[in-house]
Amino acid sequence: MINISEVLETNRMIQSENLDVRTITMGVSLLDCADSNLDVVCKNIYAKLLRYAGRLVRTGEDISREFGIPIVNKRISVTPVALVGAACCRRPEDFVEIARTLDRAAAELGVNFLGGYSAVVSKGMTPADEMLIRSIPEALAGTERICASVNVGSTKTGLDMDAVRLMGETVKAAAERTRDSGSLGCAKLVVLCNAPDDNPFMAGAFHGVTEADAVVNVGVSGPGVVKYALEQIRGADFETLCETVKRTAFKITRVGQLVAQEASRRLGVPFGIIDLSLAPTPAVGDSVADILKEIGLEHPGAPGTTAALALLNDQVKKGGVMASSYVGGLSGAFIPVSEDQGMIDAVVAGALTIEKLEAMTCVCSVGLDMIAIPGDTSAATISGIIADEAAIGMVNQKTTAVRIIPVAGKGVGETVEFGGLLGHAPIMPVNRSSCERFIARKGRIPAPIHSFRN
Amino acid sequence: MKKAVITVVGRDTVGILARTCTYLADAGVNILDISQTVVQDYFNMMMVVDVAGAKMPFAELAAGMEETGRAIGVQIKCQKEEIFDKMHRI
Image 1 (cartoon, rainbow over the protein chains, first blue to last red):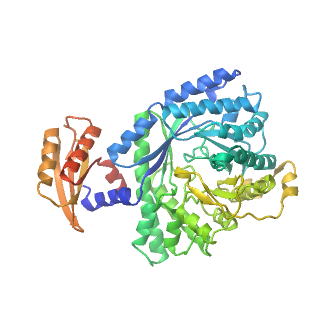
Image 2: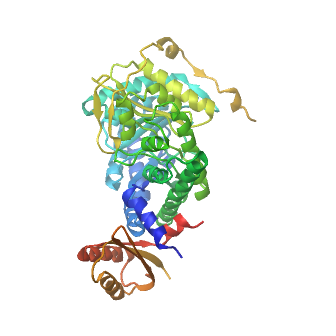
Image 3: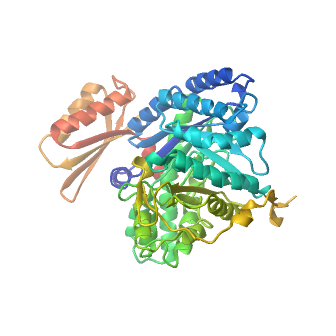
């Protein structure tokens, strides 16, 4: 039988160390909503989402109450909308109409974000893909809960540099279009390479075509728990350090597994995967940067940061895969700047630069995330940053992403405030050398040699 | 049998156990095991209970326990046992 110290440990993690289930995300396929008539498509989408996810929020709250574990977000991901709207959308405005429909459904269901306003264009863009991408700035400005993502490359296909160029322009346009809210649109737009089909975390979540009709994916978190565990073994050797992270990740993931199974059973929807990411929030003590500091760095960005992050990411995975048979999504450590007070402090202290963050993304689960840059950064430069990050993903057979915010009207030294989970961020300087001629080239970068495994 | 874990945390005072147990008896909940410890002047008690015969749904029982805790001036949580089992047992 369970003993009192174990019970108290679990409750301490929840109460004092911010252990929570970050999100229950229901993936819903919208492929069967397609039609040649836009109104019919919108009607189909709305009806299907309400039918499938009608009990999602309520179920999440019930589970949370019964097990005493906070479930912070209830969310939905859908089939990339470029596919769903391909037969009925003749112009970008038509796609925006679908975005509004999704936003209405999300509001009605009480979910805070709905992901999947997406196009997967790893090798090339269909006319519908291109139209969807061009509609993104308007769609993000005209909706509240919609998240957009575009996958511009993969290890198998190489990089679609035409899409990379277009995304540089799109990010700029989204920033401009949401100028009044600190270019908030860009906080809900992510450019990916090797995007997983089952990621439950926003903004990059979509329900891939490899998935079943509906599925429940769960994202667990708990950087505060890892930090606390490491405080107890301060100064210990690497073996003890790794063992502690691994054991903690195991415990966190088991809670996610329990919640996922319960949600799946109660909603009558198959369980997909657990995403065992360490995802920070702006709350005090809920920081990945603080873990890196506890490992022994003055600030993230100091020499040694990449090694410390590599260690952390790997041990989180090793603990997590033991705890759940179906681990997927992004799974690792997230290093967003605006959502992590420790990261913000490091930027302000001059310890953390975009170049160091880029190096860190080689060994952690995602990429350049929630980074504010000057509003006058050129579209080509943003495309260059996207291309660099995508190349890291392509060559290392991992997911990488760019969620970068060229804050309209602001420059280095200023700060932008997004509020809530998205936090605030100091504007970081960007290398001013031009990559204009590189980005202007047409076509794609071929897949790397080690992708040919057949 | 459907097991749940009740934890009571707070400053030690007269009647914590009595009032908690009275509430449980009225609710039709059977107590299987009780253990307690004092950590940093704080009273920590854990009960393993069987809620199979409870007269109300689990969520209502949990809310009632919290309410009882507030009346006594301690924090009472009632959680299904699986969360602890999953986390601490392979």
